[in-house]
Each structure stands twice: as structure tokens, then as C-alpha cells.
Image (tube, rainbow, N blue to C red; front, side):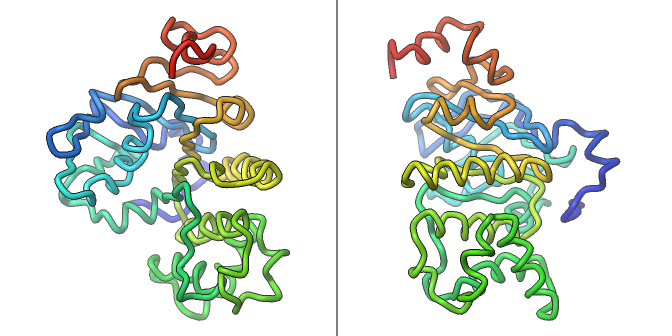
Length: 264
């Protein structure tokens, strides 16, 4: 259904790789998303911004069905990846989460595994043969801009790494699974400015190969790295536009009010 790496011809033909249509989500009786329709371009960074509690993280987690792992949570509507309806019961959520990877706000390496073992865990869910693991691990760590820093201590615990390095390790683990889309929820919130810059540069570089979707509270970050930005408010998409347009000449007064600090 979904190849690990799409062909160049396919990518040219399908600018939108992932799309939510009429997506609504609930936590028990509380509705968090309302009829959200939003497409995400292949080989580009899309940022999702908005005040706390507006549904940004919920939207991100609905895209690979992580939302449904929360007790009493459910979603309706449509999410399509390369034209395939991923909300269908016929779609294996585990396979989906390999293709639509997710990295959270707090670095979460597997503490019982080594640095190498963490990345290899991402490769193993693809069914990769043990003989191929070393190449996959190296490639993912190179992609995550971490290889040169850890290549001589792959057997060490991830606890020996800095917080920024741990976050890049988690990105490498997701990349080892060969995703079409990489979703990141506030990936730099816990990092110092130097590591923020490293992650931003990394995500920009990764967007040459995969679709990158970033939830962020940092408007400057969205403006720096995202080709398009979506503004959410109270669980609804207010505006989506090229980042330069949204941040300089927003079309909706609610967007302008939030960007200028009048609320939120």
C-alpha cells in the first residue's frame, strides 16, 4: 500500500501527500477538533500554530491514529495518505505509524536500549533483516545529524546524551522506519537555543525527502522553516497560507490579533 520511499515520479504527481477532510475529535464528551480540513505538501515543512488548547497536538496525533490510543477518545471524518483512507478499520495503525512517524515534545529514547538499539528498533518494525540494520542505523543517524557525535559510542546508553542529542536520536529512530511523513509536536520546546537551531536546520534538510509537519508555539520558528503555516483556534482551522503571507498579511482578523499578541 505505502512504499517506504516514494518514487520521484509519484512525488511530482502528488503535491499533497496527507490530507484531513472534515476531521473532528473528542476526548470523551469534550470535542477538541471541529470539521478540520487541511492538506500537507510532500517534501515541505508545514507548521501548525495557535494558542494552548486549540487542538494542535490533537490534530497531529489524529494523522497517524495515535489519538485513538487515549481512553474514551475518538475521531470522525477522513485522513488520506497518498489517497488511501487511513481511518479505515482495514488499515493497520502500527503500519500507519511507521509511514507517518511521530516525535513528541520531550525526548523519549528507550532507556533499556543502547543508542544503536534505539535506532535499530525503528528499522525492525519495517521487517528489516539483521544484516541490513547497521546500514539503516548509520543512514538514519546521518539524516538526523547525529552520526558524527555518536559513531564511536553506539553501544552507550542514550542517557549519556544531551537533551538535544536525545531528541535527534528520537528523530533518527523515526527515520529508520522510512516514513513518508514526519510529525513533530513542539520538538524544540525543551531545548537551548543552539539545539533549537540544529533541529530547525535538520527539519529543513529532511523536508527535501519527506513531508514534515511541526506543531510549534514559536511563531519565529514557523516563519523560518515552514513553507506553509496553519493557524488553529478553538479546534478549528482559521487560516492556512504560505508562511510569509500569513505572518505579514494575514487575511483573517483573528490571525492578526493572535500574531500581534492581543490574545492567547
